[in-house]
Image (cartoon, rainbow, N blue to C red):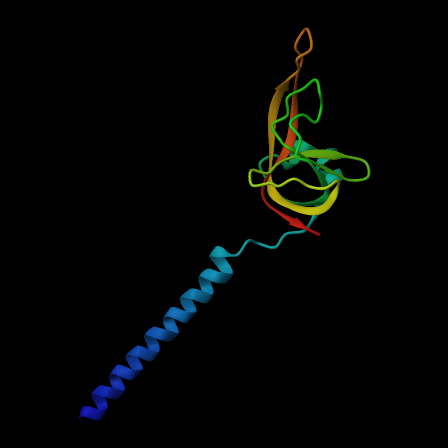
Length: 139
């Protein structure tokens, strides 16, 4: 009788441990893991930026910065410039560091738009797009 009770406790503990492992694996693969997505180029965003608006992207290019003004006559909401052979887009990276020259990177973030105003007379406004970076990895 005592052996049956001890065996029952062992089975209960074993089932509980197995359940906890299954839950942990589920959360690791389906909740906490960032979905793998295809890398896109700066050119793809530049060709139709409004199509990418508020979408999470993984963009590959050469990043330089930080700088306060990418265009001297306009205030920019980003500090970095991500370029390809024929296009560029701004990158706002709040935890960024100074880069030596142009560095190949992959930027994971959301495409945002902002209206910027020039300091020219009369003031001119335009809509520009940039990547609000969550993560930047050196390639």
